[in-house]
Image (tube, rainbow, N blue to C red; front, side):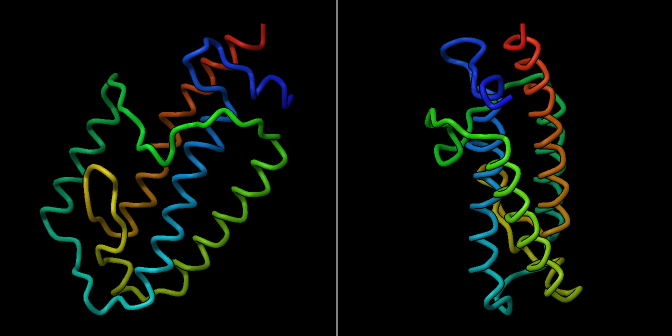
Length: 152
């Protein structure tokens, strides 16, 4: 229910709605805006080289470790009620628009460094999509723990 997803397990913890709407979805929405700007002219972007792949591998390893990372300020929850329907509608739109943007790009541009991770730096769109997957899966564990805690 909307009440359950907005309930915090502890005062300093994130609710499920905050994880989804304020963190994951906001990050993907900011990425969409960034990509819309970066893809207006891809002529100066470079292909993702070995340095980019190395940074990406390190990022993936870091996400596999049982470490916690501070979220970028823009994706830090601001304690606002969110309904599951609103989250679903908005996130669906963001993902649809991101896919449409990616589908407009040619094979050369997709391999260019058109996305910037806040810590790891520039990456290509394959790495971006893979990062979104591992980022989501990491927070899926958090959502499941939170759900167990607040549903009782």
